[in-house]
Structure formats: C-alpha cells, structure tokens
Length: 126
Image 1 (cartoon, helix red, strand yellow):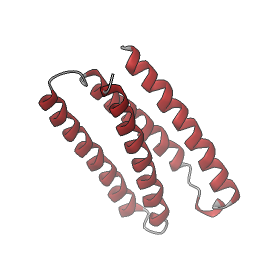
Image 2 (image 1 turned 135 degrees about the horizontal axis):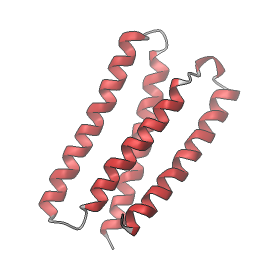
Image 3 (image 1 turned 135 degrees about the vertical axis):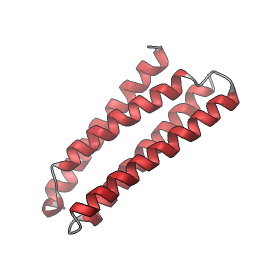
C-alpha cells in the first residue's frame, strides 16, 4: 500500500466520522421521526465502497493517461449504477419513507464523489 493510499484512507475515515457525527446531530435533534438504522449501514457501505474504488484509482493514477481516464470513467459510472440500484431496491420495499432515503443516499454520493475528485486532483499534481 502506497503512502498516497494510506493518506487517502485516513482522510476518508475522518470524513466518515464527521458525517456520522453531523448525521447523528441532525437526526437526533431535528429529524428523529425519519431516522433509520439502515442509514448507519448505508454510510459504512459507501465508506468501504468509495475507499476501495478510490484506492484502486490512486494506485493507477500515474499510469498512462488514456488508461487512467477510461478506468476513472468506468469506476464512476459503476459507482453511480450501484447507488441507483440501492435506491430502486429500497423504494420497491419501503415507499413510505423513500424520499428521505433518496436524499440521504444522494447526499452521501455527492459528498464522497466531490471528496474523491479533490483527492485525485491533489494526488495527480504531485
């Protein structure tokens, strides 16, 4: 494991802890009726999924530019597809609180995507 990957894993772990803390405060004080234990597992899944895919990208960031660009596109598309599948499956079984689940899932997707993009941009400049 390279130093870049280790640094990324530390940063994404800190980000996940901050998201968990902020989520706890929001749901405990403001949206208590909408809290689902599933959100904890969703956060952990997204953390592991993003950490593994981003680590793979970081491993190949200094390879051929065309190959990296194609790999980055495939991984981002795959990541989006996984999130859409999660949302659709949830909505099939739990329509009554689907709006909050979609909002939480898309917010996490956005946060981790932006974070991953900034990290890749920072690493590629080195």
